Length: 332
Ligand code: F6P
Image 1 (cartoon, rainbow, N blue to C red):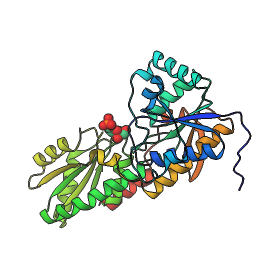
Image 2 (image 1 turned 90 degrees about the vertical axis):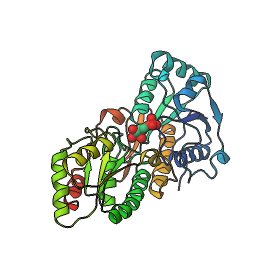
Image 3 (image 1 turned 90 degrees about the horizontal axis):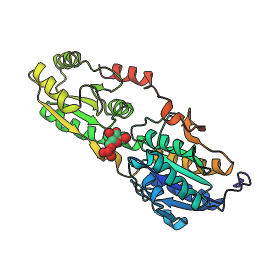
Image 4 (image 1 turned 135 degrees about the vertical axis):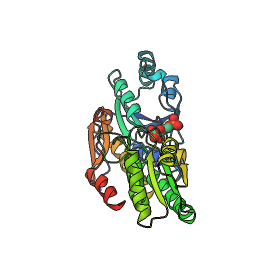
């Protein structure tokens, strides 16, 4: 198989991870470094995301820098949410650092906020900028999956399996809160795979009285325990508030709340995330070599894609209506 994508004047590229971490970032960094070296490019890591770009915190990477990282959660480059970067002054500083280091390409591993920052930077620098989607919320446009989502779903489902044991033993109702500040992809997938009785999502208005009726009906039919998955960003204000409302209107329930929280952001990436992250990393480097710029790597309909970088935040992905229907049928 031919390894050379096309001759290019590209000599040196850099990579950074920005925003909340997600499992699989290290696998992606490993693929980026190894692909760059395969194509005889110099590769630098920028520590602490855009913050490190502004302060010029660059480290050279080689094949050994990424040994033994494919199975590790987090990001060995460290990450940050940086407010200064999104100011004109911050972007100007970043452009100067990229120019000073004669950086031909920059790969940004980020969620939709960071990728919007990457796009803003791309409008001011001659360095070619490439985006790679990562987010346990899976809320990045222009890709069906972002790095970390699959692992986060698996983590949440493992928690639900454990909670079901205690919920059944005590005949209790559990509200389990997943992350997902604005979108419910993680909560919906978790609810289906965890066999939850109901799911409350930021995208849909949550009708607590009808949820109470549904739970009461299930009880009448002999269901002694129930699990309701609540996305962090649900309009009712999270699992604790909903638990109080249920407790008030549906007497006779012994309600408990479990917030999974940042556990979903850590841990060894699933095989799916390792493979996805590796494919994204290699695709990003090879796109730069082909002369692409201001693009987002993604996967759509099972195929690797390159979309305009703006897709990351301009395209609002809908929840899959088939999954919504499935969750409705299976929880009845
Ligand atoms: O964007 C990913 C996410 O995990 C959200 O679901 C969550 O609300 C947020 O990050 C929490 O981020 P942090 O605690 O790192 O600020």
